[in-house]
Length: 164
Image (cartoon, rainbow, N blue to C red; front, side, top):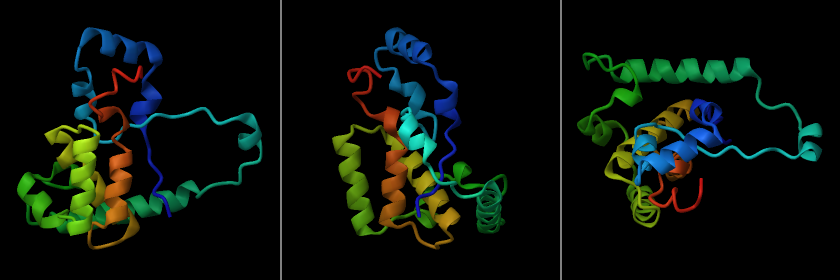
């Protein structure tokens, strides 16, 4: 099951804002680097939209989110000032979000091929840990890493050149 992504960033951005960022900062992706989840939203053609089946109910999503937050609160109960995955330190990342070897290799390839920053590495692991929590799994698995990488759409080193 694919985890539903709430992408407030995409909802708030307009083409004008992106253009302004691109023109005012040669390496404008630095701004996107500080945001955990960002993705492009494509328009859905009417033909597909009109025959879409209802998705997962909001109540079910809410329950998964509540359970994930409870998992995180329990995980960080001994860490003062840390309540959720987004607040993890580098040491905590190694303790709670360390992927297995194949997942680490996938992350390494993504970092190199997509020219992700060092900050993106931590963000990807934090998001992957959250995806694993939403799924109710103890370990961060390769499909969690893959999904988290997918949420770094605008973090690629070449986003300005691609005309986004």
